[in-house]
Image (cartoon, rainbow, N blue to C red; front, side):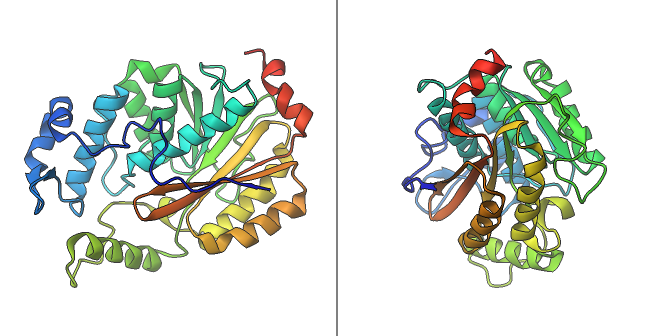
Length: 316
């Protein structure tokens, strides 16, 4: 099992590795201007505890860096931090490059499954915009997929690269989504973090308190997030264990399976579950954004020869 060293900042190719250039971002999304103020350090910034300000910042980031216009999400849905999401994509690109003579494979022939694409479509937007990869976004909520389709319809550059599939059985992750003829270069997932709505609200309250330094921060999901986005029975560890167990059935359909793991204490049980299925490769990639450390756990049921021949057999 490989364990990469933690980086001190975002991935080297991540365009969000430097401080936000708010003047440039305002040119891409004029509505951002109303939220940009001088902070106590006399630097331009926004109130990151204000969900509308964060949503508008996301719009400007997607417009400025990825050429995506009119991005929006329905009220109450998760508004993700784009820099961290971009890191996941870039690290997976590095993983594919190892099997491709050190070159990141680009183009629509690279096919990725985003498990739980949500209403925001962030991973497919970044992956298709930067590497021209093709994405299938799955979700259990029709409204989420409708939102994704609205984003696609507003951006011609996304239409050929992103499709969606509805998961009709909430107990399944890959069944009903991966077809027998599918060959995904990797799957990715940002699993539900919390075990309950109560736990999700408590976590959000702590987040708002840290941002505002106010002891009486409002106990609401200020940054959005529906049931399937933020919590599920058993929380992150239960979801990931289910994903691992169900991945074995599709062992030949995917080069790599992967998932984000937010809680370090969940890793031992995740590794035990993986090892019980005897995959041929397990790798952990750690990512750092400020004080926050997250990790990507990757596994493959293909042996070394099959992995090395993957791109040859797919005829890229």
